[in-house]
Structure formats: structure tokens, C-alpha cells
Image (tube, rainbow, N blue to C red; front, side, top):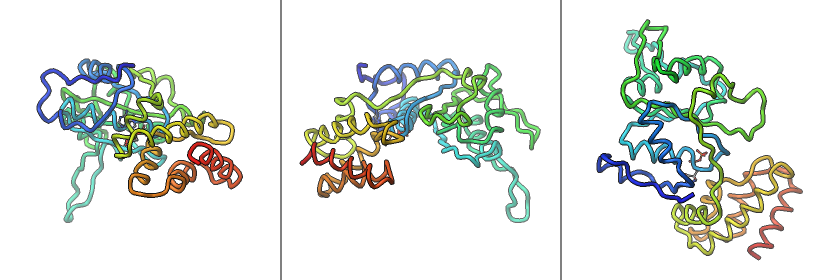
Length: 273
Ligand code: ADP
């Protein structure tokens, strides 16, 4: 938990432009080691805790192109691999993001991979073992991943939906790292940096978030994410009254239940009032 994330040796100058990411532990070193050894990586953790930012940061540091796919329940293997499309009366093959990443030696990030259709996992298997191949049935090609190709997937184990969990046969192909909301001091630094709001006011928002997270499983299905605290802080930095900003960014997105909302607003008044 040292929060350090040292520059990669030999990385190009561009890497210094990497999006801001404050490390919670040794995840940067783990990512680098996985990448250097052609190992795919699975990021587990609640929504809005920094997984996507981490991947963009690492891709920039390692100077690799990044293809991010937000998975949804209609996403099929063809969406990732590619398809024949009609262009000017001709049928042409168009690579999907996974195929492009495999050809270019890029990082392909499948965000919320459990949401995708089942045929997607079938495609991932030969890519996540030492064969590193992507068979494209439609064209008859069998692509060998270019050096540098890395598959990264994320999922949120907290949803507790038995139908939407990753099968052991898939999960056991990845090096995995668990992410969670950062400890309050780190989270304060992150939110202050992202929103421009002063640390003193951010600290109160983080304190509220910690209290709201403690209600997860009782009144709330999901805790407040770091993303939502950044939203609240951004609104406040723009001049919006604290209570209104907190209601809009940290309470309304969490629940539709009027009684619960009222209870949470009381908590806000107790902290900020
Ligand atoms: P996830 O992919 O886990 O849903 P994101 O990576 O999109 O979450 O994070 C949401 C937002 O929270 C980011 O856009 C960023 O503003 C902020 N954030 C969260 N964790 C960090 C971190 N460790 N360093 C920098 N920003 C962070």
C-alpha cells in the first residue's frame, strides 16, 4: 500500500502523459510483470473504483494502443472479432476490436466481461493460454497474437448473480488482482486531484461515502463509487451548494426509494449541516 507507481524503464517519453492514476498497492508492478510474460489479467472490484483508469494509465506507460470494449448482454463474439460488411456494393471484412488488438500487439480491455454472451468466453480461451491464437472462423484465418498483445478483463464480483459470474475454467486463465475503494486518505487525494476541490471539503465527502458504503447490503445495493464522489466534488467546485451536489451525485444514483433517500439526506445534514 505505498501508492507508488514508478515509471517503466525504457518507456518512451509519451508515457509521462499517462492519465493520472494513484496506485493502492503493487498493481502497477503486477500489470507490468503480467504484460512482460504474456499473461492475461483479470481485475475484480466494484464499479467506479478505478479499474478502467488503471488500464488506460498502464497502456500509456507501456506505450501500447488500447482497445476498450464495454461488455453488455448482447455483445457477441462477432462484435469482438469482426464481420463482413457491405461497402459500396462490395462485401469486405472489418476487424473487430479484439482482432485489431491481436494483430497490432495492443491491449484489449473487456470491461464487465461477465455481461457478454457465452460465445465470447469460447473465443478468449485459445488467446489466454500459451497458444495465444485467435481463430477467425468466418475468414478461415488463425491469427497468432503479435508481441505485446495483452488481454485484460474486469468484473464486479459484488453483483452476486449466479448466472453472471465467471466460470472457473475461464477465471483460471488469468492473473487476477482485486480492486476496492481506496482508503480515505488516498481517496481524498484522488478526488481532490480529479475535481479541483480543496482537500478539506473533499475529506468530508469521503467521510460521507464511507458511511454510505457501510449501508451496502442493508438499505443500498451498491456503495458510493469513487467516480460519484468525483462528480459531487466537481459540482461543488463549480459553485453548487454542497447538499444539492451530494444529493444529485451521491444519493439519487444509489436508490429510488423515497424513505431511504430521506434517511440518507439526514446523514448528509449530520455531516455537513
Ligand atoms: P471502474 O472502471 O472501476 O468502474 P473507473 O476507472 O472508471 O472505474 O474510475 C472512475 C473514476 O474514479 C475515474 O474516472 C477517476 O476519476 C476516479 N478514480 C478512481 N480510482 C482512481 C485512482 N486510483 N487514481 C485516479 N483516479 C481514480
